[in-house]
Length: 272
Image 1 (cartoon, rainbow, N blue to C red):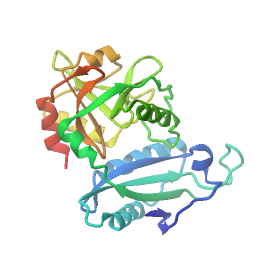
Image 2: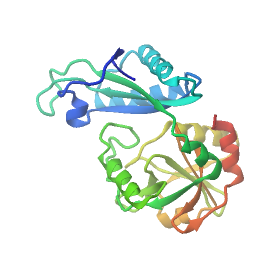
Image 3: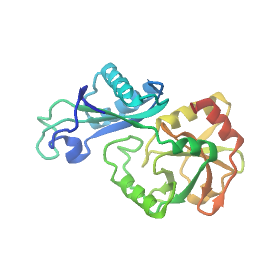
Image 4: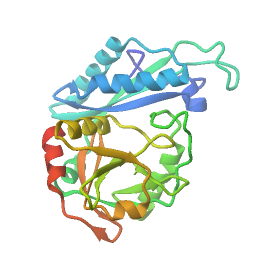
């Protein structure tokens, strides 16, 4: 089911600026028994990206209602399912110019939960290493904007090679994320790390939740630029996103790991 500005629809205008230029942002949520998980964080992340792009914010109470509406239509007895909020600047404008653009267009849709994610949570995920490097875009780094061509190319590489997921590096050789998730790892000195995302990558909602749990558990996590060798030297690793929640990493290429105790602890705190 799709709602466009709250009304059932199967299409948007060909002049919509997200179609024309990727001019907008999105967020993907997990719903459990009809309830959007971590809604305030998704709203804040969307607001932050809209501010950078100079797009007016929608009525968030309405958007929340639309998310629940599409969820009810999708549910059909399922415990969990996903929803996507997609916001475009709207229709119009001359070329790249934003003068004369209409009201923002908010599309909300729902989809079935990928059940293999539950198996990944229990058994872990095996990663490849993508040969597609992320470029630097400091102004947009961290935001989930609608320009996702790098991710399309990375996903195509995964599908060709049969990987479950893959680490992705930037043009400087620093590990940024996986194709769909944020990364955490523990080094030989028991210090936890996660990539710094001020040049590339997406700062996920579940990443934020994990960083908060680190603090609550008396652990620190350093946000850093790290090489592939740094990550391969890790003693424990896991990945996160809103649908996956927390998933252990059990292999990168030919190197393997057992699932760590702290990973299981974080899973107990955050996985639903």
